[in-house]
Length: 56
Image (cartoon, rainbow, N blue to C red; front, side):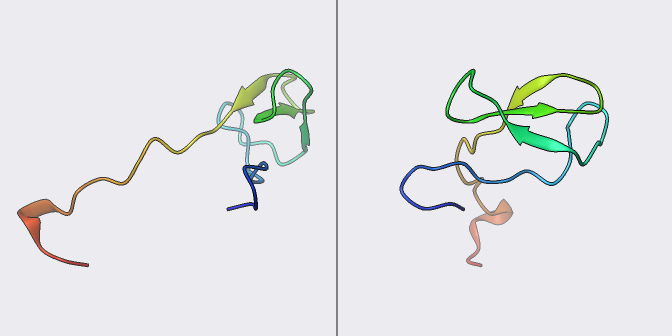
């Protein structure tokens, strides 16, 4: 994760798996794929519970 709420760098575009990704000005978490020209954002929603209630 990045520091102080900055952006974390995704490795691949979720639509085309392209690797040429650049920060986009649409939002602080937006990325632009130079291969498919889509703009996307990735965010963490939380941590899933461990099945069966065990510990990690």
